[in-house]
Image (tube, rainbow, N blue to C red; front, side):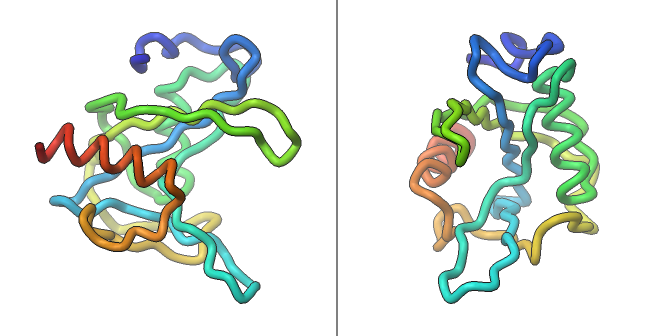
Length: 147
């Protein structure tokens, strides 16, 4: 799958009945931007990539730009690679496909958070504290970009 395959405006924000979400890999010299959700419990939640749900009438590219901008304050200037995707069920039991893209940004700072408790620039080869699905996406990205 490539971004061009999904770059038309999607009437219901979904493709073939599957809701779409996007995740963006923002790379700063081998460090990846990860967002830290709010946590009030004893278990530290996993970190996540910036992203968004593809809204009705929005293209995947528009969702990537909007999601990164809203969650981090960064301006996406280009999409370099489609890195991969995975499917899961939402908490409501609906099928979701999460598409992941490596993006270029105008600058890697300042980070302005809208919904998260914090952020880290984590080295790709370090402890990322992400889900196994996101780890696989980042491993694919690392092999693609850094060989």
